[in-house]
Image (cartoon, rainbow, N blue to C red; front, side, top):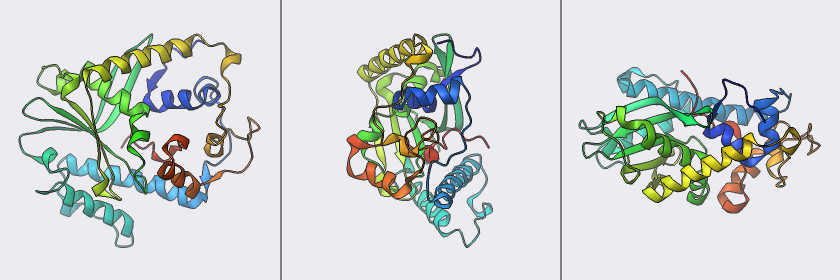
Length: 284
């Protein structure tokens, strides 16, 4: 299958391919728009998307140097206010993010890294990359889900593979020209709704080599598929939260948002992905 000449791979579209090849084909190759919602209730789903976007925007402004007292949150936004207070507490001495806020660190907010992947580019827009004086690097991702998922679920996500891989390959310009080894990298998922549930996933040389092999194999599989080989996922639970479900004769009604949340809280082997948490590539 020949991809568009200007196509760029990301953790999001690669995750779509892994989850369902047919969804990848419809969304990125055929550019099919389909009038369906992802989850019910619609208003709650839209609220989560909006809330996550606004939190990312607040943190981005703060990281750019705007004083916290100048960042106004309407009084009625109790949930966003709570998240913002959790963030402010986390960067204070004794907080789980205090280390990233030390004056000696280099901080890069909303930084985009890219590298070659086959004949295309692999890109990632990271919420925050922190370089410490000893050369260690942390990638911080603000995960604005209502409840933290299982660590094992996050570990297997393409985001956890792509972000550290790209930082190792292309991050030397963030480190005064010095290369960053896999053993110096750590991925941190921080949850404003539950700041005590921070998930830290260290990287290493073996994981880097495994991720490189995995991405190369994934690309080789994708580009050699014929149009008829982009089959629907065999895990029909995923279809409940896919806008193409009726097009694929996998149901008409969207799955319940509460069922999705419960799925990744209860059984990490039975999880699905929904797009309301794909705010890591939002541009401001």
